[in-house]
Structures are given as structure tokens and as C-alpha cells.
Length: 339
Ligand SMILES: [Zn+2]
Image (cartoon, rainbow, N blue to C red; front, side):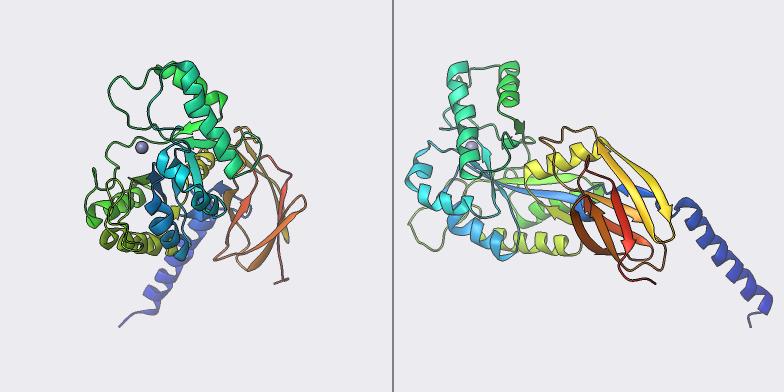
């Protein structure tokens, strides 16, 4: 039998525990989510060399699942040139193009590197227009011995000049080459979730069943691995564990987040005002940041306004998760319906 005394002690302890939680988080307290939409980790799919199986198989399968990937193209390479109409169609989707040099043949000297790297970036910004000098991802092509004839400092100079950002290394991340089975590939994603960090897979060809061209692209990733992998990644995305995105979005978010400061300007019973700054250059780093703000427990549907930009989000258990632009005007939050 439970005595009334014990029940009241349990109650008192519960009340203390909840008081402790509230002491840690006051209304208006705000932090920047580690990743977009407060997802646990990031996973990036990358496809190299502009193989036809990318638009034949990879792009439609990604689109079916509402997912995106980064495509490292070589605009002067044979397969790309003969299929340029198909690549124009890919350019109009949500897929993101990245610089893998014009020809994939290496660089002879600085002048040739300017063409190989710089011209590729120019073509990408024409195929997928956006802000002037917007950041583009760069993936170093694997070339034979003696074919890459500029040094690290020269490469860095060119990347900076053309607003290119190097992707993380291919080593250990090549589908078919390093990562051979479905289990190995999905383990990368689960590793990202466990460390709340980033992981990625770099694919070359994807197995082509239809249309049957009688041959496969380089290092074709079997569809019996590729399709279940996409499904397993989507499942992790749907449950909020993975942000599946392109390299530049991940890079922008991390840079803005690491340089961000949030100030609570005002807390009144029916409103909160915040200021969000980031040391990242807003011309190049303009990805929305996700904020997590403690709001009064009774708030549900909330309005968010930042200058002329308005949005809505639903608070859960006194916590509101929403997107803002760093270095924009102050952010106001208030309940859409008076509780
Ligand atoms: Zn390559």
C-alpha cells in the first residue's frame, strides 16, 4: 500500500524536477540548431564525372523520394557533351551541380588550371543561375601520375578566386570502390547520426537496366543496393535524423552556425524579439539558420516575422523551431491565436 506521505513526496520530487528544467530554460532562451530543421546529422550523396546513368537512373529515383544530391560534372568530357540536352533538364531540377574540372584530364599549368577549374565554375553558374559568385563545390578529379601540375597553394588561390569550396576527401567514401555493400553504406549514415556530424558517399556509375545500352558506366552501383539505400536514407530523413542535402548547403549552414550569436532583445507576455548575427559573409553565406526558442508552454501555432518575411510554425511543449536569415532584421515571435 502506498502511504499518502509517499505520494506527496513523489509529487514534490516531480515538481522539483520540472522546476529544474525551467530554471535551465527561460522563455526567450534561443540556440542555433546544430543542423537545419534541428535534424541530428547530415548525409550527402555525390555523383562524379557526369555519367549518363546519373540522369537515367539516379536523378529520377532521387526525385521520387524528394531527395537531392550533388553532381560533379565535367562539361568538356565526351559523355557530357553528347548528352548536354539531358543535363540541361537536370539543371532545372533541385539537383546541385559541382565543379569536377572541364575535361577530367588534369591540369598542365596555372593557365590550363584556370580553364579547367574556372571555366567549369562559369558554366555551372550559367546552367544553374543564382546570386552572382554564389559558392560552388569543387571535387578534385582522380588523374594519372604527372597529370596534375599545380601545387596546393596555386589550387587554393584558384578556388578562392572562383568562390569554390573543396568537398571532403574521396578516400574511404567511394561507392563500389571503398564501400561495397548496402550495410557498409548505410553504416556511414548511422555513424553520422551517432556523432551528430556529416557523412557522404561518392558514386560514379549507377547500374543501367532501362534503357539497355549493353554496357555500364564506370563502377556501376547495383540498383539492388542503390534503391534500398535511398529508401533507408529517406526513412532516416523522415524521422528527423538526417538532413540529406548538397555540399554547399551543408558548408554554408555549418559556417553560419559556427559564427552565429543570438540575442534575446525583448520578452513580453505575448511576444519575443531576437537578433541573429553571424560572422560569415552574408553575400556568400545566405542559407537559412534554424533556431530553437523557449516559448510560453501554452503557445501553439506561432507567427514568425523578420522584416517583410513572415512564416508560421507550431510550438511543442514550449519549444519553437523555425528558420531565419542571419544578419537580417530582428525576429519577432508571437502566438497566432491568443491562448
Ligand atoms: Zn572523377
